Image (cartoon, rainbow over all chains, first blue to last red):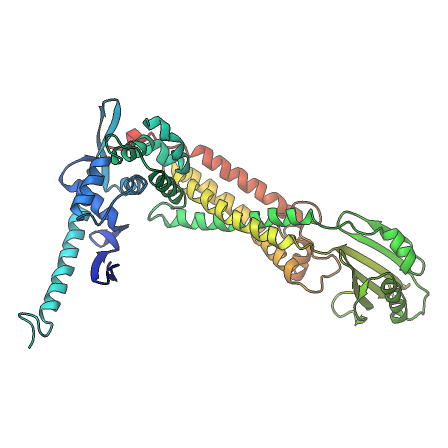
Length: 139
Length: 333
């Protein structure tokens, strides 16, 4: 669901509060925005935990800052739903690096959700263009 | 500080997350602090809070697991209420000696018995004497001893109790019911039944136990649901757990209903409605079964209801033991 909310400086901002991941008509998972961005981060390439944190911060323009506890709780649920999987494990300087990748069903679900959001955004843009006083809108 | 130096923070997380992601969690937190940085106290606190939150989160999109967790919540609340209520009974004041009391306030007492939570005494009075007058004499004697006595009331026998005149008396610690029966199988009888009053600490302890039980029940239900979901053969454990819950729920419901009666019934039917009159109880009382017109065990007795949860918990324990987690490395691609 996309919700309108007032930011702390009083401006209206659009924030994705909660999303529902679908495959076809089947609801796979109701997720918070951080989880959506985790799937998005893994779309391009497998990443390890800290890599996911950095990628999500970049992709959300700093709006979503994952904490380790939030990240691995979300990864666990996405793994349960089959949307992600462990890609490989590496040992770097004696440290475990576990890389996660988007599964095929995860990629399909993310693509479908992205398309939904695109349609919704297009619908909102179209309605706004009809607003009186807007360029292209009704006089 | 090394990764190992932060491992105690993981205690806040459920075991399944510790096993799967424990090392990564700490590793990521250390990496986020920067090459020379150390996680701040706030960051560590958030890590712990996130772990505690995960303990409360049931498996996603598993309605049966959610239903089991809700039942566990209810059972936990009932168990907590029973524990708190039982702790509350430890504050009951001692009862007066029934024999001595009977000799002071009854005309010619036959016997008097005092147990931990109940006293009883009776006495005949002359055949043909007025029951109201006999009850009034006892009421005056009790009042002279400092008991607060209620008004005389008459029962015509239509409620299943023999025709009688009765009244209640109480002091700071004890409640008495005094009945004068004009005809108990051919002779009149005066009886006294007494039980302890609820101490002020009883209700707070019961509420505290209920709240703790709610939390414990939900956490247990959620942990069990996750364990069964991750098991190699979940169906077997799910059936055992469901059967265990079915065995426990009637006793939990019975206890809660009995507790509500104990807390709300203004005129207890001669037994005080005590829910722990025979020690720790987790099931319906005889008073509840009588009140619901279920007899005292047409199908199950109160004692049976005390036994059922033991079998139920045993089944759940076996189900949990059998729900051995799959090898997590084999479970991922």
